[in-house]
Amino acid sequence: MLETHDLTVRFGGHVAVNAVSCAFAPGTLTAIVGPNGAGKTTYFNLISGQIAATAGTVSLNGELLSGQSPSARTRAGLGRAFQLTNLFPSLSVLENVRLAVQATHSGRHRRGLNLWSIWSDHQSLMQRALEILDAVAMRHQQQAVVSSLPHGDQRKLEVALLMALEPQVYMFDEPTAGMSHDEAPVILNLIRALKADKTKTILLVEHKMDVVRELADRIIVLHNGTLVADGEPASVIASDVVQQAYLGVAPEKEAA
Image (tube, rainbow, N blue to C red; front, side, top):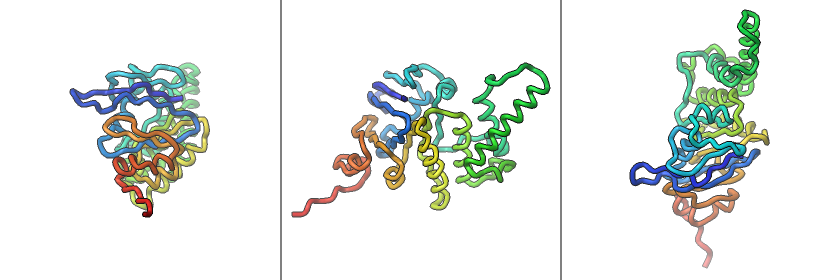
């Protein structure tokens, strides 16, 4: 279980995230919504360690992650995708995934420094990378240079890198941002497939409420860095305070 307790960050006199306490269980997808500037991405940055908290804690399966580096949190089981793709643009699709697999398995199967073990390890890493490319339907693009890929395929590849890390927690920050109407369903199908693994926890920042309605088991709403709603999607979306202030949708008037 991923848990934040009174997680807070201040930038000067501005409180960007204000004492947010939440627990996220395996087998669930939680959507984090709110207007621009509500603190959603900052909350993600605090969880994954991109910025240091002013106060509060982050823990995973009872292990305190606060104070640990982003790489240490990744090794602990957090996997993070960013709003902008975070890939190696000059390398091939296969090499990007192979490096992620290698980072995950480094030292696990080391059998000594000899040519056979190095070759065997390399073959094992490449096979795992190809399996992941199969999962995201990109094996046919394995030799393509990443910088030549369209935006939608780069987003798919970023999901592949997350899968290679074998995280317990997947964190997606606006995964369909900048994607065309035809490209977005591919990413959403990948997230659905990940959600089917009930041992994984998924956190999703997303502005598109049709996506949230379809995927989320739970919605939490941030406003000015404060948690203002938390619950089952239908009840959260239907609440007047969320519709008026956070989703920009006026509630229906009761009949006279």
